[in-house]
Length: 362
Ligand SMILES: Nc1ncnc2c1ncn2[C@@H]1O[C@H](COP(=O)(O)OP(=O)(O)OP(=O)(O)O)[C@@H](O)[C@H]1O
Ligand SMILES: [Mg+2]
Image (cartoon, rainbow, N blue to C red; front, side):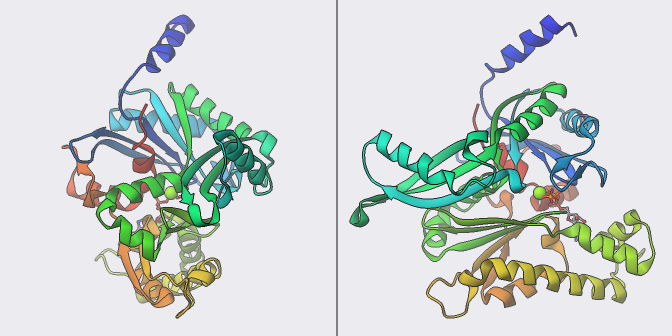
């Protein structure tokens, strides 16, 4: 394509209407989702997930940009997506969210206060960040506003936008994965939202490299945290102990042996890994799961590939002393045709972030 033609297409892409393409550049896969608005909810029209090699991204640093760009193109192509405008999700140390209160006042005063207050919470520096905030509500008795601030590092966001551009896409929004999950949660569980909001709910996304924890209460997250633990550690442990390749270990973990059974040895490895990861999670959640404390939260929703690990739900229920459910987007979101049963199951497990990103409008 001539560069003029390309510029023209980029420009036209900005006038597209409807939902943005949700683009999740995870550490282990690039995922895309396209939704459309229906009468009461949304419908998932397209979805694809393209795995990345182990070394494509290391500790949040992209090592192989060409691989990322190629995976984005491939995902868009595989899903059959015609749209060009995307909402990219970011997570990790180049992002932050913080909920706090500022004195009430004029719109300018409130904004000044929010930005000033935010500075101390942004580890990568406010000057290098894009800062966004959402006013959750007023607390009249204290004369304050309750706000949620989200920030991300501009240079890293620009890198991601460049990858999208090189894959022929135009980035309209760069979102945070935790907000994508939160938005999806609020939509899917709208009916029970008042209850969840009053009692609080712990949402955990068990990814390949990252475990994301969101504590949601009184209309917004009160805590978000990302831990560097996930499914890859378990696969590596199986690989090491059983002396098999990484792929074989991944297969054993996910599908069991040739009869579909998990060998006892594998169950043992998974059990001890799950216990270790839950111990990390416990440290983050201590304040919210201490039995009998006035802050105790007993509702929990889980998503991500690791949510399927044998024993995970039961162990987690023991840990929080409450109720653990699978966070399934399709309890509300409708499904387009063309998805097989297996695909639907898989997307329900690994799709929360890209689907949440795809809720955003152009
Ligand atoms: N049925 C299953 N049982 C156990 N583990 C599974 C299952 N299905 C997938 N996984 C694991 O879940 C992980 C992939 O989940 P997911 O797609 O949510 O992660 P990701 O979004 O790519 O990772 P990250 O968010 O860390 O970038 C892999 O480690 C995979 O081995
Ligand atoms: Mg993920």
